[in-house]
Length: 217
Image (cartoon, rainbow, N blue to C red; front, side, top):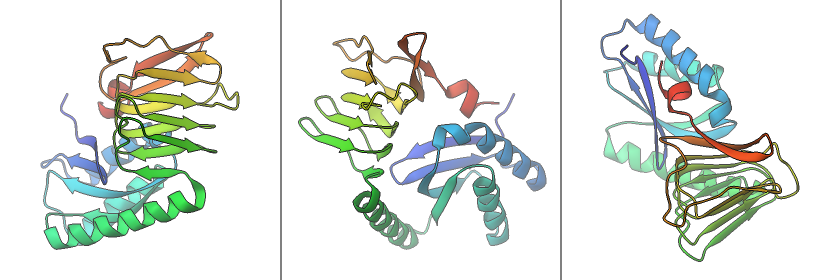
């Protein structure tokens, strides 16, 4: 069955690819359903949005943004388009907002963590970028990586076994949630395909692909 809505992450936020032929009112319903299904995955975040796949009027863009925010906890900071100057200004505004949030709450980090770098947070954290091999993220809450995980993540370090780790691609060198530690391949083998969520289940860490449940209908 053809997907009416496809969600992809990008460095500035997310891209929503829309069916070019579906009647707009039906498309709104499909968007509402997609973001309702994925609300837990994205959580409460602020990001830029790109709408692709079809021509949209300003009114249609406004209605789509409203549907997304009403069916999730996502706050759309700005809408990216094909106008390079507007895109540049929007990305600048997003960077400034993320830096403000990071300084105030420690909840967001934008950029790739490279070998030898470490990021620690007293609360859940969203990393908009990759965590490369040799880099480390430590959090008392959840860790969400809008990028690839090849380094080490330690979530729920205060003993919170309900914490989760999410990444667009997960091939960690090390993965720990509370007192539970996953067996990771030295060769950096992927734990599952596509977007992955890792959580404690039955006394061990399980990593599951989220592609079918969140990105397909």
